[in-house]
Image 1 (tube, helix red, strand yellow):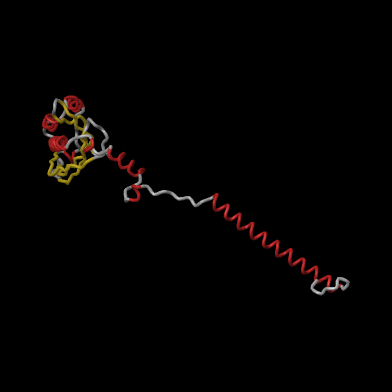
Image 2 (image 1 turned 90 degrees about the vertical axis):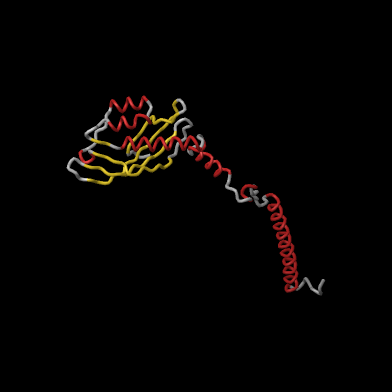
Length: 206
């Protein structure tokens, strides 16, 4: 075979190297085939995960979780529970109440309460009568120059609340005059078809 003489040492070495080369070639070929088969099997078993895009996201709408948060936030919007007419009427009452309630005259310390009485429930009027207001000396006379209303978060379906900011001037018994800014958190409820103030808090965090 190949003109080799196996009695010679050099020919036997050539035969050995030839057989070794053949086995190495076969080994590499088999190894390559097995690796290719394994890769194909793994590709079939673990296809890339494709997360389907929801129709809402595709259309540019917010995800459902965000929509849920928005719906939850709407619970605190008073417009969700009351009509525009109810909100408007209650706002007017809140403004009128604060303008009457804020004004103060140390010479007539009960006048502010009587002026505000038409806008209050009987229960609040009686409560205020038992705890008459006393202003410090530098606020012996209070006057309202402007009153503004700001909305508040409120989930109640029976009580409407408004923040009323009253700005004006305070006069002390010594004649000194200082600008004032007071915040009133006013709660109103409907009594016999009329909106009345059932609670008020002054200069407290809302």
